[in-house]
Amino acid sequence: MSTSSPAHYLTVGEYLKREERASSKHEYVDGLIFPICAVTKRHNVIAQNISRALHPKLRGTGCQVYISDVMVRVRPTNSFYYPDVMVTCSPYDPTGVIEDNPRLVVEVLSRSTAATDRREKVMAYKQVPSVREYLIVHQSRPRLELHRRTADGSWIFLEFGLRDDVILESLPSPTCLPARAIYEDVEWKKDWTVHEDSAADAYGVEGEENPDEDQWDENLEW
Image (cartoon, rainbow, N blue to C red; front, side):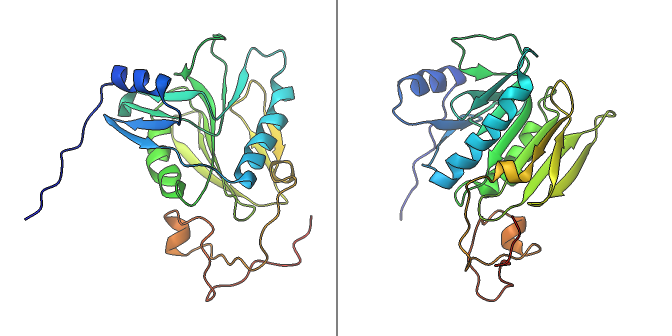
């Protein structure tokens, strides 16, 4: 008869001290920690494209854009995440490593994180009062999913393709972020296949190959 070891729960203080000394990053969800896997170069290019596009739009506004190394604290779920990109208009703290009040949060999907980014983090980020938009960026194809908080506090869901412009309303003034700018210098394997309504797509198997589904358009216009 085998027995499993009980999970070791960390307090927030223990987690932050451990993270300060750690050689790799971990996210924290109510006492449990989860390592952050290495990302692809394509993932990194997409995140940098978004950061570069947003930075000049924020000049002189008092807002900042951060990429990957600054944590977001989600107090209602007792969690800490490292979003790929975020924008905050909180007072600038040059030595800070935690942000409590982001306005815009962006996650670039990968095979290992897609389910978490599209389910757990959607629910978590929506509980942060300052978050007005949560943008999910696919890297296996040009697809963007935007969750936006409306004036009455409800949320709407919008989808965009490569030819679309994403209008971000969470910044100090509405900002146009063309999908082509997000995916600049990004290439996709032409033999990858996708199906928008598949269970894998709905629940986060990012970039899964399936020869039985319709192939991605090889004549995609840029």
